[in-house]
Image (cartoon, rainbow, N blue to C red):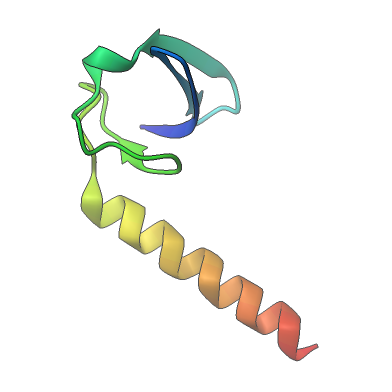
Length: 67
């Protein structure tokens, strides 16, 4: 599993599960891939995992605001 950290020109910087980074040509990703999307090992977007992590982050943010 990777997370798209950022794009730099024609490259994509992906964060690995262990906190490292991998740089790949942007062309290896699907055209609809966006920053913070979760990717499978084949660089396809994992929409379910992306949605789950975004919901989790939103929930944590909301809990922090309530404190």
